[in-house]
Image 1 (cartoon, rainbow, N blue to C red):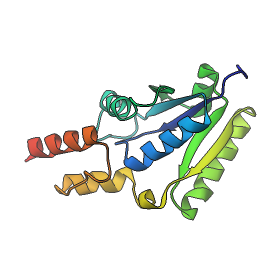
Image 2: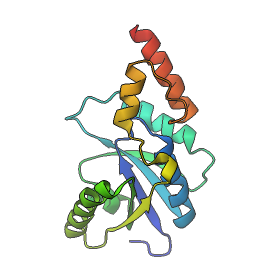
Image 3: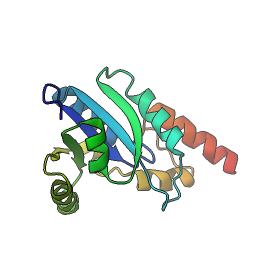
Image 4: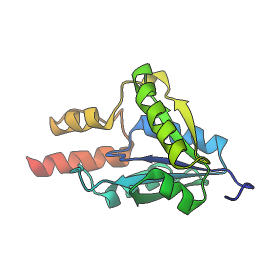
Length: 165
């Protein structure tokens, strides 16, 4: 691993990316030299947006951050970390209930790769109730999600819902 730069990976499905996710990315970008927002390719799930769409949303929403890049990965996050020579995993925490699951994941990742350090960033209070699942449900029922997601995602939701009508 290149110890001269501190590279972190913020992995997830990001279906879609929310303002809560963006808050974690922005705060991570202040801590690390480089942050890679990596979209998980999970063939077992039927996502609302394609991997390419999600990557484009993230790239547009993080364009103001010079040290943030967007990528995708299949499989295990620790394998992706090794491939990118990254030493850190960023995970956001919304509530105490998230911590138990995230701690298990961090412990397993550490077991799989002793060099993988997980950094937990608690979400800001105003984003503590946000989840991609809830936002998708609101959008499916033609609810206003504009306060919860970047403008590019809101526009995509509006177009998708209008086309499904």
